[in-house]
Amino acid sequence: MKYSFKAISQTLFLCSTFLFNACAQNNHQSTKISTKMDKMEQYAATKHLLVATFGAGCFWCVETQLMQLQGVDTVISGFSGGSVINPTYKEVCTGTTGHAEVCQVYFDSTKINFAELLKAFFVTHDPTQLNRQGNDEGTQYRSAIFYHDENQKQEATKIIAELNAAKAYESPIVTEVTAFSKFYPAEDYHQNYYNANPEQAYCAYVIKPKKDKFDKVFRDKLKK
Figure 1 (cartoon, rainbow, N blue to C red):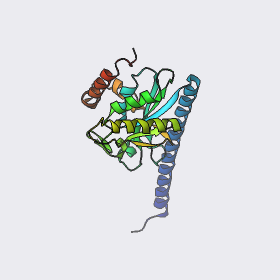
Figure 2: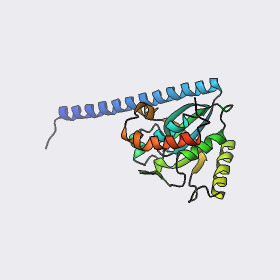
Figure 3: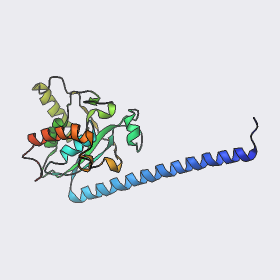
Figure 4: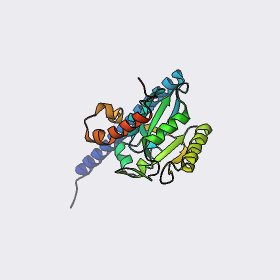
């Protein structure tokens, strides 16, 4: 079959246009993410907030629980620990990017310290489950502490050793403790998910029971 020069030219034009638009869209998304995080970092610096990054399964669940604590200013759902730049939720869900679903927690250390956040972190999920939480399976749901400095690393390894020694769980803790590298916020619809979608089935049957348990354990530490 022969193709005219005109047809070939039109095909090449359409392909190049598609690629240009895709690149432009990716660049726009990258710029948007960078701007958002720059503003957050500026806000955190102004408020003298510290940051912690936790992976404990579905970030909707973790965000809902940790945001209730006194001293926690902001919680952003997103991704850490992978190799792909600016990953989308769909990409992370394939389990091929290396990222974990995480919550970036900005907190006032005069009201809550990192050790207290760690205790809350271990209540939010089951740290003995490898690469899963309940029915959510995959490396993106792994239990992980991405430490931001040597103090956070020492605190994390210390509490894990204490919990294992006390046999707080029937099985050993498998939580990953690794140096923080990069955080990418998830799409806007993932933020404050439970409060925005309380009637959604996952929120009602998965997140709410976890929240209720968390509320009982930390009832004296919750925001009024």
